[in-house]
Length: 596
Image 1: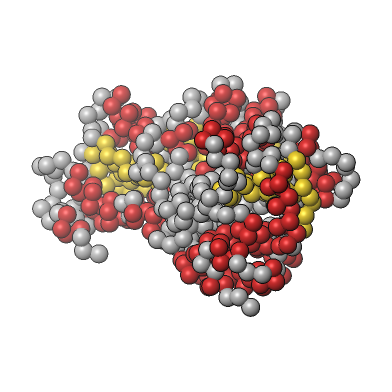
Image 2: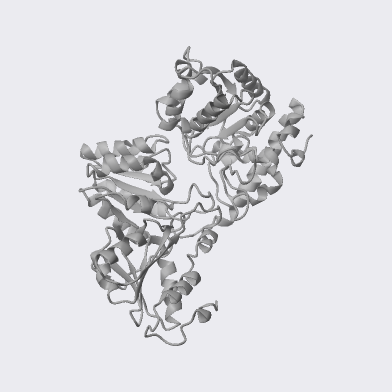
């Protein structure tokens, strides 16, 4: 039996007999289960592509032949077979292997396409480049799941690929009938009919692509035969591989909810922890729908991950899963609002990027009362640069007429959601991070639309806390108080538009600072600074947030540390920023803050 640690690259895999290649599969599955149990990660998708990945690397000569992974969360097996077995223990850890293809790791990772439905466009572009440069001796292979095939961008690409028979592209359709949950829509129905051999001709053939399959995606030799047949066509071909998500791990196979799509690290499974932000939102929305028959929930293939499971159980006729199609979700919501409903679109913050034009032109331009709820906002960490929700505040600040809330805890999330759904003159948005909602942070005072969370003995610094950064800002205030610096911490629960009370309160302080776990460019801090400038206050403003660069994967605390968004870093920076001659104690020095 070959040992997995002896596979240093695809060339070693190709040297094995068919029987020896089959014997690698159980070893790979054991390694996947052990690694994901220790580190967390996308277990189910990778268990489902073990044999498929082995076959791909035995037929094609990566990286000369370009193998592209749509979404990329199912690339762990690819990493193992391209020489990274020894590093897999570092998966998703700070400084370790990424949970997605990463060009810095290996020449076999062609693109870092960790948002769905993009691989076919990449493949079309690479095939066009090959034709332009006369490179007809290399293959372009795109592995795309049936879930990703619900995204409109995939069909835009197929429309172009099928129209060019002279440009070979091998589309490997990994059909397991699921994205996060069972795949929805007419495409899913068509693939089911193909699996059952109920139709004489596939939709792909009607679009100009050849079709091979369906093939048992867990039979390495059958997949190899199908892939070689596809190459021999020398034209665009779809190879339809039927696989089972979670294959070979009984708990995943029996889990009908998501087949262990993503699992948490064992160390992170803490019983009795505070409810997650997602669960708080989901329960509150379901309660709201009990009394508001016009409330409709929309998900883009992520019903349970965005907290809509309870809503779906109590109001099954008022939840819409559009598949991985955020653009369609947003304009559908605009149509629902035009028809008299109040849609709530629940997305991960990073995926809102994909539907910005629809938000701007279809929702905001029409002042449609649509509420956007953005989960995993700010630093999410483990999933890396594509999944940190660091763009939403900058994007949403551009949208005329939109009101934006950043709740600091579970209680303010529930309050903001009720206010959002009650708003009928334009769009609203709420954003919150991944993980536990923590302990509620009560206000010590209310100043118009501002919640005052802390008042120091002197009005030296006005510290504007955005959303989940409240606990950090309170820690900063206490550290500075020990140094004789007075801090007022305020939370504008609705950060857009900037509350007018904030500019008035700023006049009583020497310095205004904002803290947000989002990009500094165009975020809340930038809006506050602009408001202060427009008001002619003359009070200097300092904006603390995420630098405008793609952040490496790592835990949330590690990423925040790297961005300087910890109480210690912020306290030091604020002390340095205070103007000279401030009326505070002589003991307030940067050196004194360094202790602890």
